[in-house]
Image (cartoon, rainbow, N blue to C red):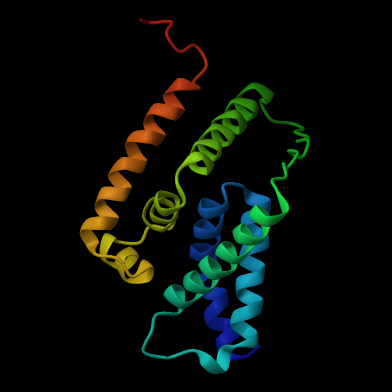
Length: 170
């Protein structure tokens, strides 16, 4: 394995969190992550060592995502069917509640405007600082903070609206 391959392997968890957050679901996030890694390996000679590898990979993933969204808008929308989950030996109720909550959160993230979804993916999902996210997105830190604030408000509202038993205690 090359040094670049080893370095990429070390940052895959961060890249995966970002791509899942950006796409709004695990399957598409994993596909995007795989495309980004393949492109990075193909173009490893273009990597500038003074730049953080994670930032470079995230920029690659963002560019691929933007290209895919443009293609999808020209082709029309498609919907993804959830895979059936088979759970053996676990508390089915707890597992199902976790699955519903995860689907609710991912659906709420998917409904965010693209600019807010990118900030959420970088800061809330991938754990980058505001400054790091601002550098990766080529934005002022204040813009990242305001987008994240609006996204948090929308997510909180959307997720609470879809909680089972909403209004029971009101």
